[in-house]
Image (cartoon, rainbow, N blue to C red):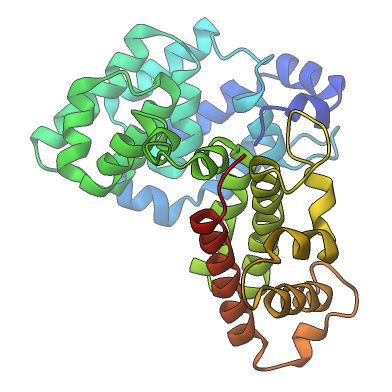
Length: 325
């Protein structure tokens, strides 16, 4: 998210950050807290936003302390391999890792970006000790997850701890990180399914639909599903030969129009009414059209869910009954 912060913050920020010792100031504050308080007291008596504000407020800049901190941590052009900074981190880790609970994601990334083997080893030793002493908590899980992401999951022993401490996360790693989840889906031999699963944008649209549906944001979920349906329709038309135009890939821009979509599913009973209603809902969706008529209808959510299921049935019927070219 913040990897392109250099585009957002002008060069003057980098200059000020580099010359005012802001990272050192930050660690001085963290060190003061970490060496004088327990983990529980840190999070309750020293809110991280107050510490960040104190260490990263720069009167010469209009940017917030959080933006400056993110620049220091996530910008690839800003080096954290500073010997003085590394020594401060080591000193704090030699005492405890409770200070990381203030901001486990960013502080763990900061430690990893030092690329100092001794410092990272000290972090890992604390995690192994916490596990052995059965004092592992959710902060240690977050630290471990960030470590895995930064190191591309290169630590078998720590993965074994994750498997015990958080089996759900370990399962996620097994199915979605150890291998590409698309490889599991592409085991389907149907040529249509293979084409859809290989289209990352279609997968992303469907994933976002599921996310919003889980959050009960039905209108937003419908927007993502409608985009998914349009894209799938273009793929099905291309692979089946219903789209007669020349080209080496589907014509995705064509199937936002109702008539073009109707022509793809016209051999399926009831498709005309389903598609017509889906387009009506799209035009009433406040995320797509200024009329925002869906906001005026209390029963619109039930109707959206019903139409989504009918559109899914259209896709399944097409794949089942229409031979590819």
